[in-house]
Length: 128
Image: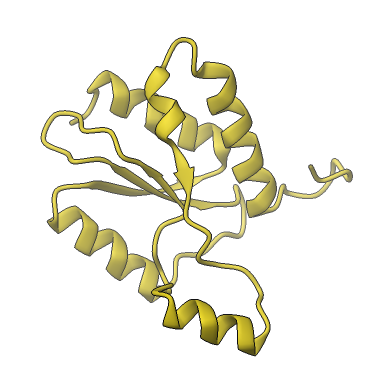
């Protein structure tokens, strides 16, 4: 985690906090064992980026997936951004739209707390 309390947590910090929360909540919410991160982003060398692209990595794919059906949705995708300063790229907007058209709930969350509330509401069937 970010050691300087005056700084906004990074996206990586937010994601680690979300998965820590999910691990603690598995007793109450066993579905959270299926929550996973899609490692699409990050800084890579040119050779590594080329290899990942050839293996099917695509820009804009949301960060987090919960492959659990609820209501009319096949599953939940979350593009997780830091609380302050996170912006959605055009590729991310396109993926969120396309996933929504395919029957998934695909949303943006700013910070792990917002993401955890989205997950709780989704699993409870609220707002579906």
